Length: 390
Image 1 (cartoon, rainbow, N blue to C red):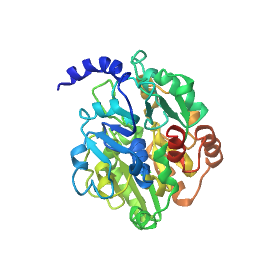
Image 2: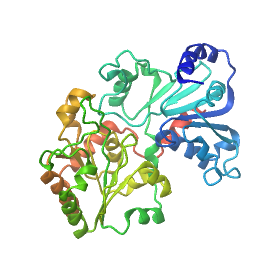
Image 3: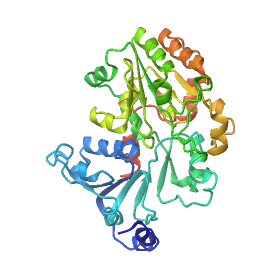
């Protein structure tokens, strides 16, 4: 079946969905950008708490065939679980009482008998959905509920997805629960014996100009990305600074960013999503171990606030980004409680502050965390499921 044919079917499928009887014991998951993030966190919680003893669980994901392989799919442990293709999941979705998604979706309106939860993939600083320029009239509301982590973000999610107040559930994000756990063996492996561990998580750029995926730091010769920065001569100087102070830096590719080889460094590594899978853990296990975070406009820093540790914001292209994508707040700089990095000197100074234990933004960070994270106890998945699967 072609994509065009499927798209033409979704309108009639919304009508059909109203009349199909729902299976009270069928739970459905959808993800078209890797089985990860909030939707995976909900699935993992269900597996860890025996939901598959009572419910049948169907996962429609892009890498479904890999999950059917013996090394990833263990029938004796995960009984009543089935992985199917995105196309093959349509009929299962129509039968499911409960459905969850955070990346992609079937543009099928849920029936009154269904509970479809858009767990999304982070609270936004940059504009999303109907708040994006040129997407004001796009239909995104194909859910019963959507998550927001606070009243502040409830209003933003309503604007972004053109949904009602009743559709917004204020709840912590399931993916953040792992940051409140401890796994000594895994944590030691992640830290690799470093005295300090810093995580650099850039967001995705898709610029209107020819230079796509451009990140720049003014006096670094307009480097295109953190990867290019690290490949330069200055990158080797930066690596030496980290090595002398036993600091480990990991740069995480955005899932939409092309992978790149940075060459040899002793204390800098670049990870893709596959690297996390191969290491047997997720991004948030690494985030839990990070003594500091470097990012820019990524939603990950709202999550990291829960750990109350230093954050550095790379903001060299903020004006360009605001013109092309825009922010959900009128005063985005005021919503970034941490060091604002625009030059190589700023970056080095932030790393030195982490090494020396200086944390001048602690009070501002804690105040801001209370604004954006109403739930801070590591039980977000349980709270969500208790509310919707009574």
